[in-house]
Length: 182
Image (tube, rainbow, N blue to C red; front, top):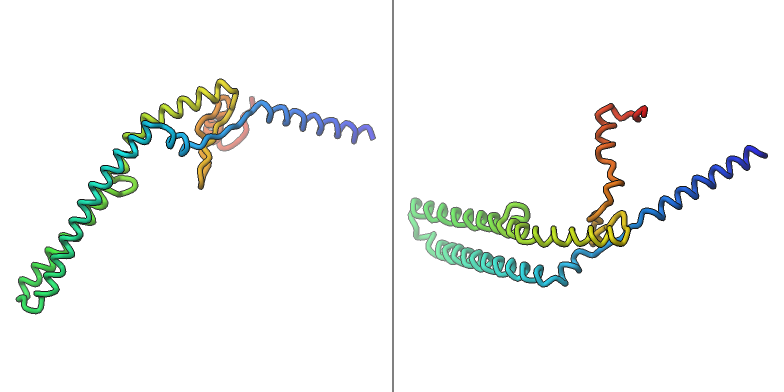
């Protein structure tokens, strides 16, 4: 009987310590999309990007129209063309199509394209500013973690360094995954 009471008290103590620990770690979230939507600087960057995208799209459309016009012309004349002229025209059409694809990749690729790089370059200082303010607010209000509430994922935007286990994990992995004997 004494043993079960002692066990019950131990369990109760562990639960109480866990609840106290959980209360000390405050978690908050922000919606970064909404924050950026409210910042005039972000709106200006967005307009600049849209302007650049529009210019590239216009160029791409012009190139595509030229290709289509030359292809239509080729279709009308191909029956009367000698094999060498026909081959040259087909080669020219293929080269135009390749240039269009290369232009599209150079400008619009989601990782390496000019638009993606420009977006990263223009937004980087603003993102740093937002993250710094998030960290300040989190510290002032006593939050241990601040998450970004997004549609498909959750990202930690701020975490109190005292909860960082990175080097402890690295150390343990380097020792073969065993617990330290300290």
